[in-house]
Amino acid sequence: MSESPECRKLPPLRGTGCDNNGRITGPLAEERTVSLIPKHDGGKKVDLSKIDPGDTGSVSKQDAEQQTVSLLAELAELQDLLYAAGETAVLVVLQGLDTAGKDGSIQHVMGAMNPQSCRVASFKVPTPLEAAHDFLWRIHAETPGRGNVTIFNRSHYEDVLVVRVHDLVPEKVWRSRYATINGFEKLLSDADTVIVKFMLHISKDEQEKRLIEREQDPTKAWKLSPTDWKERELWDRYQEAYEDAINNCSNKYAPWYVVPANHKWYRNLILAQTLVEALRPFRKSWEDRLKTIGSEELKQLRAMRQRHS
Ligand code: AMP
Ligand code: MG
Image (cartoon, rainbow, N blue to C red; front, side):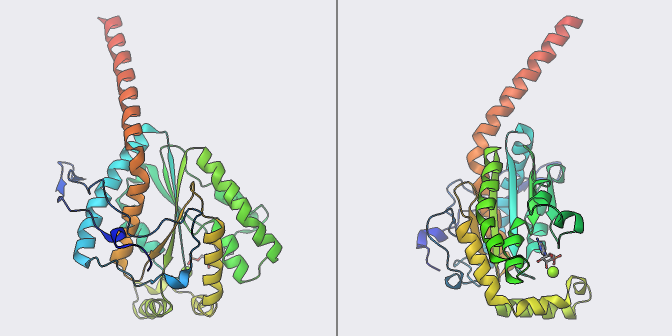
């Protein structure tokens, strides 16, 4: 990978604790965390062939796992503030080829968030009703409101990925969708939605390994589909489609992150770190909002007590 060495530093770990309710608390990752992977927000173009899916950024598995615990505690804390302040929405887009780890990421990283204000929306082959509408119809209906987090397990990007690779619509149609997606994501951003998009990047060999594992493990075989092996034959076309989607739809208001995902522990660290970094800048504003709401409520409570005394 091409990042500079300072991209790879990990914050020092200050340990973790547990409060009386069993919640992980207290010592959180240092605010000065430096990103392990680049943000694609409209500047330099991405070349997927130059990003090693097996990269682990010189981080040991043990360090990564410890840091992930610490970052996830901070993520849960930020999510509480997000919910209480009710000013901002968060949309996380998860894309990747079969077996790339979308489900595992949801379980291990997003699972740290409070289900009260966090949900997953999964997008499959469009139903006849969905297919009778424009491609964003079903997507827009699932976007998060202020205070909430929604994780898209696949997304509107399928309409420029699988749809392109399988020639489900003419090129003119899928190509015009890049601009439509940019406009749509700008609309969400203007309505206070923080958008973070992840492509889980695995190697062809790792995919083969995971498909065979699924075949041999009766607890995982339910995830298999005979089409997975057929889709694999279209590997290069998918890489091309992903690269174009990322390069055409990377913006400051909706950046993409290409996550080296062959090693699940590294993938988890990157996801946790990227989400925390996306939300940290809002902490002060959310805390201020809570203070305002709190003092307003207290004022009303005192007024009520006076009226009844
Ligand atoms: P899975 O995520 O393994 O449950 O599979 C869902 C399937 O739905 C994948 O093969 C996707 O490519 C497919 N899919 C999702 N969105 C679309 C779409 N807009 N058009 C066609 N196929 C889609
Ligand atoms: Mg599948």
